Structure formats: structure tokens, C-alpha cells
Image (tube, rainbow, N blue to C red; front, side):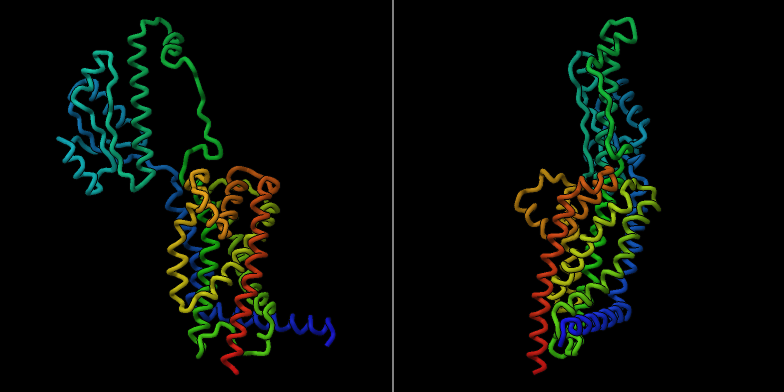
Length: 398
């Protein structure tokens, strides 16, 4: 048999495997949910929740043991801020903690009894801030409001005591070294702007792996011997099997990837500075790496439920390991090594830099290179594990 004839036969078999895999995808409701429904609905829901970017009017309870004019002025300024709303005054800390435990309030401002006394003595007074750390956005609003208001009141007290006669002298007295705070890449300080791009890339990987794993579990459950590879003349070559199945997943997720990275950010007016060609050059190796990673993992799936238990459990750790919601420099070396096993690590980092920070393809060359390496490595591993599955099928058939 000539090389050209073998090539045509292999191409025909790969096309047959692609067609059969595509039929199985659209017959299996579970796979359809993870391949189509979840990538469409979940990003919309997640983006809609965080579309406001910041929280306003966070309810806070005040415990004022000072009962002075200065403490009442402090409470008025806290309540006048955009981020915090004074819910009520509690008699003591026990009552305030009860309100927080019942989720009626998200934090406590405690003004000690010596607050005004210490200020009148020209001593430093304190404001106690107790926050519910279960929601970082509420914690940020409560804590930053307290910082800003106390700094402002401290500056006003300094002006009164300075004895200066001009506004400029008062400015120099209270702020001798002036500075300008310029938030880079996230001017509104919103949560959605910096975390949504990474979440979209993680959704891409997780739904793809879940769909492939469900399909593999279905194939095993339908086989009398639990074989992943059916006995058929077309399933006679490892590369034909891997390429035929991969082509099915690639075709579906080319569409879903374009939706996740180009449509969703524009629907909710998130920052989207990536260029089309740069995005294609990033998503191509990322798609291949995710597909072959999913095919490798699917060979470990014995039952349909196993892949959901595995991938859903590690979704949140994978988000932290990307270095977006938790600083990459603060991740221990061992866990950074573990993160290199997953395509989402380099895909999310590169996409955030390109989409949110305006980086070009040349700025994310290391991440793109690592994705190509992962794609090649997982392709080789997929061939190895599918080769083992093919031998097991032949052994059971014989």
C-alpha cells in the first residue's frame, strides 16, 4: 500500500471518527450542557453579578461609647460616603456582633469612650473597624471608607491647630508631600474588570474537560467491558483516533472560544483591548492544549460523575493559581509548579495582560510558548493513553 493511499485511508478513518464523535456529542444531553449551555449561560450570569464592579451603601452598625460631638461628626462623615451606610447605633459590641452574625450588617465601627478626650489632649485617637471577611468587596468598602474619613478629619484638625493664615500654608502643613493616585488598567477599582477575563478562560478549560470526560464516561458505561475505544476498522490507528476526536472538540470550541473572549466582555462593557490577530495566536495553542489535556484526563474517567467531582473541585484553586485573584509572587514554588500542568494558568495570564493591560503578542511570548509546549506534551500523552485503551479493546475482543 502506497504512502498516499495510507494517508487517504487514515484521513477517511479520522473523518469517520469525527462524525461519530459529533453524533455522540449532540445525542448526549450532559455533554451538550457542558459544551454549549454552560459556556453560554454561566459567563453571562457571572458577568451580570459583577457588572456593577463595586459595592455601594454597605450596611454598618456603630458602637459609640464616646457620645461626643467629635464622634457624632465622625459618624456623619462615614454615613455620607458612597460606600457605607450607617444602619443603626448599637448599645454595645455584643449587640453589634449579633447584627453582623444575622447578616443585617456587614461590619462594625467602634468608637472608644476616650475618643474625644484623646483628641482634645492632642493625642492620637483610634477608630475600631470590624469587618465581615466572607465578602472581600464589603470588607474593602468598609475599611477604605474608615481610612479616608479618618485621614480627612485628621487633616482638618491639623489645619485648626497649625495657626496658618492661607489655604496654601494649610495644604503644605497637612500634606507636605503631594501625590496623585492613578489606578492602572482598572480605573474604577472594580472587581469584575480584573477577575472576569481570568474566569472566562477558566470556564473555557473546565467546560471543555467536563464535556470530554462525560463523553468518555458514557462510552465506558455503554461498553460491555468498559472500553473507551470501540472495536471498528476505523479505530485501528492511535493518531486517527486522537485527531478525529480532537477535531470534533476543536470545531465546537472555536465558536465557544470566540463567544467567551470577544462577545461576553463587550456585552457588559468590560475592558477589551486585545487585537483579533493577537487573540487568535493566543487561543489556538490554548484550545489545542485544553483539548488534548481533556482527552488525557478523560481516559482516567470510569463513570460520568467522576469528571465532575474532579474538575469542579479544583476550579477555585485553579483560579488562585493563575495569579490573578491572588498575587503570583505570593504563591509557593511547589504550587507554582503544579499550576504549570494546567493550560488555564498561562492562558488566563496572557489573556488578562492582552485584554485588560493592552499587551501585544510579543509581550506574552513566554505564555504562548508554554501553551504550545503543553499542547505538544498533552498530544503525546493522549496518544499514549488512547494507545493503551486500543490495546485493551483488542484484548477484550480477542
